[in-house]
Structures are given as structure tokens and as C-alpha cells.
Image (cartoon, rainbow, N blue to C red; front, side, top):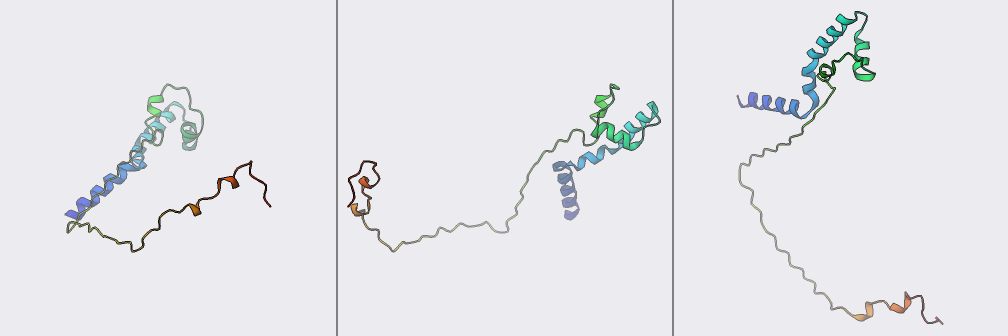
Length: 125
């Protein structure tokens, strides 16, 4: 029973987070195609698809019906859910690391001479 519930949950999440729900609108596509064929019996399915998806739609005042077609307006809402089941509570162990090296104090001999980078420097021999 748990596997069945899991499969149903995965299917619902897949349909919700992808554009697969647009395939549920396919009956609307065929109904609208029949409406166009009633107006003009010469319209083929490819002409209908080209008219609504790839070309200019006729001014037949059915824009609300055209927007109900699949893949006309695609709204993808992404919900990311992470469910983690721990069999034991994870424990974080702090690790101490001792650095055996002692650092030498700063010495001026490592500081570069500011006269070497100055444009007005004394002549070099």
C-alpha cells in the first residue's frame, strides 16, 4: 500500500512540476478543431495547428477559446520537496586540529623598497 501511495505521489508531483498537465487539454484541441471545421470544412488538422501555433490566427473572436488550447500558455510551477528519513539522528563531531608550526614575527626585510616602484627614483648604477 505504501508503494502505491508513493507512485501516486510521484505521478502528481511530476504532472504538477512539468508541462505534462498540458496533455490533459488535448480534448479541448480536438473540440476546437471541430468548431473550426463546422465554420469551414476545408480546414485540415495541419492548417488548424499552423493557424493556432505557428501563424496568424483568424479574427473570429475566439481568443478566450484559443488560450485554452494546450501549450498556448504554459505555466510551470516548480516545487522542490526533499523528504529524508533518518534511521538514526546524525551526530556532528567537532574535530580539533593542532597546528604544530609557530609563525615567525613580521620582519621589515621582507617589505619591498617603496623607491623601486616610484616613478621618481634615484639613478641605478
